[in-house]
Length: 153
View 1 (cartoon, rainbow, N blue to C red):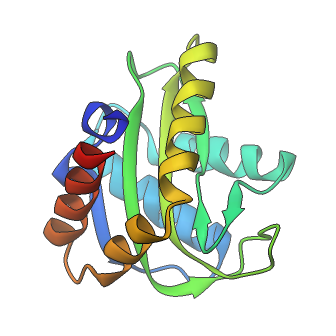
View 2 (view 1 turned 180 degrees about the vertical axis):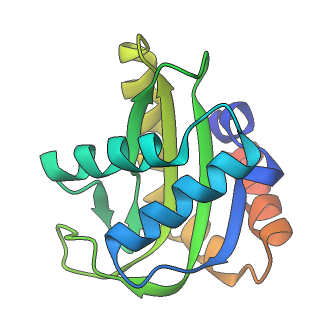
């Protein structure tokens, strides 16, 4: 039930543009700023890119979990993104990425952050879940698929 705790429909983005990792993360930062105005999109983008420089957040099978800390949030915030086109994300299996689950975590949330990442990675490793997300043709359908699968998990 981790997705229910961190994701809302207004933070679900189907057919997101992004021709590169950098452009996709920039678009995600702008999108998150539109739903969470207290978070500066440039600062968020810089934090996400800084984390990517430490090593790719791609986990394979077309999935990446970009994440960063932010002092403007009190609890973990999720953003589910299905890209218009798969992009290179330096994945360990060399497959392009088309699904992003972005996490913004509080500055102090170390243990919770790692547990959330691990739970999400386990969910996203399930082919049935990935397939349902990829079938979605709207942000509403993408959100519904995530919620439905999270309930069943």
